[in-house]
Image (cartoon, rainbow, N blue to C red; front, side, top):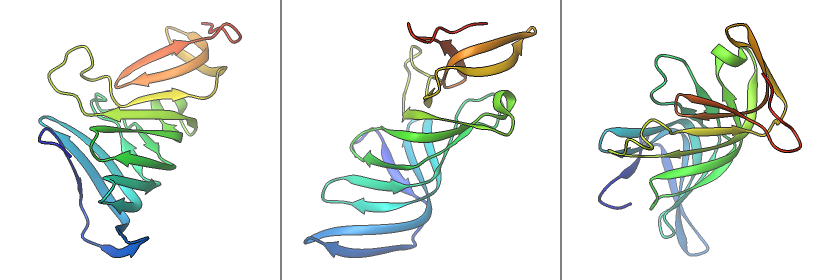
Length: 171
């Protein structure tokens, strides 16, 4: 980490060993936090291995909590991914997004990215970011009685619908 942000764990339940002559710290069901000034990334109930010599955390599972949602409960269940601890964020694929106001009892499979940001109005509130793998997602009554068909992105609290040349979006 650098002087501007830090990654921390809420648990002291860990096991340290040496693998290939390098230290490895195993964490089971802990909460991981990255903080920078007013912003915090939260990953709950994560497991993984910390490789301090390489400054990486190889993660298994976890629940990423959406920030700045205006009260909506939005979260993503994570698969396996790697956090480079010298960076103020991470990327994950094969993520399941849960956003009950739009998708009730269903999750969306996609990829996500989260990053700590400070005092930059252009990107403040635009993280975490999620992009669905589905290109022809159907959402009933997105507002004013309109239905939507296409791809889905969530950047912080902002929702984006989009299409491709092959699969155009429709309302």
